[in-house]
Length: 221
Image 1 (spheres, rainbow, N blue to C red):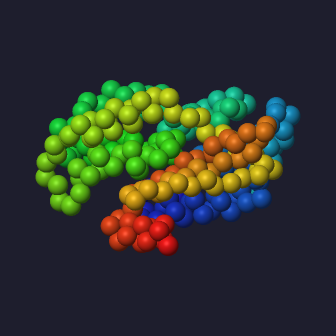
Image 2: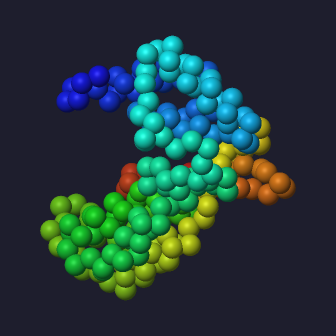
């Protein structure tokens, strides 16, 4: 497929999804194929099945860009291994080294860096509220107060020791635990493995003003 076409990425994604349909061990993102196998024997079988499917559809692979049989890999800003999914060290370092913002552009950049890893941070939206409040409306400048500075340092600390997210066990029971305040909602998707709950992802978001009123009314009804 030629580069530059407006819908090239979406079209190719649909095509490669069709190619890999039914291969539940294959996870495809555009032209990257991840194969998750429980052991070496299964991995070799999975490779054979995928290569047969690619060959059937006339797709070739660049051997020099392949990682085969690896126990760990970096993918889309994350490190993935048998233990689970964690944030990429170099990306975390960029957040930890980020200086305290002095203008709107710097604060937006920091918020963007944190948002990329928000699924690793419980109640991220609530923790970030003192910072995101600085960007309400058409903010032209910022003035970080004590609560905003505390939020800035707290989020950095949580990023530094972020929870490892488990690899999903499709046979395990799952649940969603949720929590809410007057200004934000959050939760965790988790699975029951080895007699304990393992987090798969955290999620959270701020409530807009109309939602805050609704949530407060429901909570008191």
